[in-house]
Length: 110
Image 1 (cartoon, helix red, strand yellow):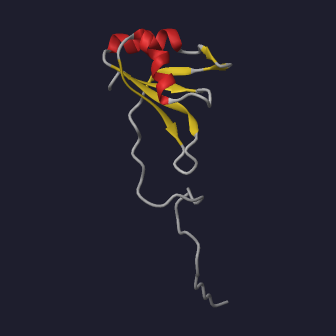
Image 2 (cartoon, one colour):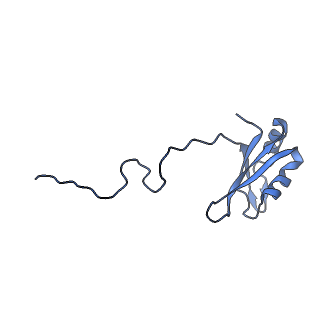
Image 3 (cartoon, rainbow, N blue to C red):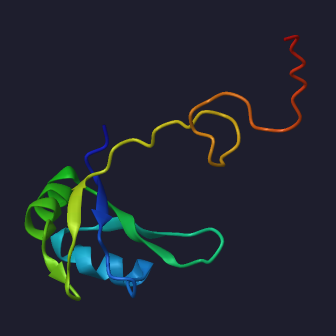
């Protein structure tokens, strides 16, 4: 697991990639800082990822920034987990499996 990449959650909606990077550079070299945005609206989803050059810098940032208040919000900082693979298929509301609606020809004899 890459312990140099941190998940940062509960971010203020005004935070940008640049302000996120600035916030964490006090702990060491930040190689990447990205706010995750909604594909449709382009607005922040309220979380992002910060990657450091060293594990020591990431550990210091986690220890000192977790639950720190930024613009009235207590941010969450921890080691990022690998992205879970999604099953192929469409989205939608039918998460329980099974068919997806449509015409059914259920002719039963009574």
